[in-house]
Image 1 (cartoon, rainbow, N blue to C red):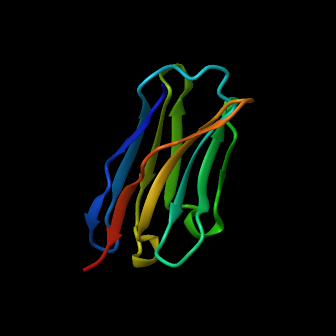
Image 2 (cartoon, rainbow, N blue to C red):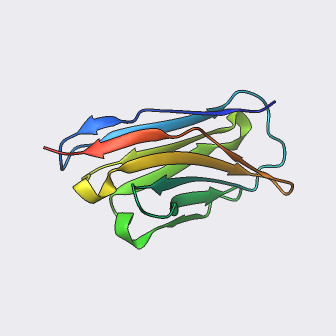
Length: 115
């Protein structure tokens, strides 16, 4: 059984930084994409950033220039460096890893940006 475990969330002031990490407890074969999604109260879950096995990245327009995704497919890990955080970045952040057969989700880690 594979589990994705996120860490690194917390409370930070506007303008601050956090680094989220996600690691799989078991091996996931043939990964094609890893990503981070977020969901704020009363809103739909949205893609924040993703990286393919070939290294191509894409970001939500709202986070471009502030958040950076990186990953190590061999280690089944993915990271999200978050800088210049804003109150509107407050949400539960979920790790996602996909192979051709299914998608795996983490349990979520809360990020709160507030003074």
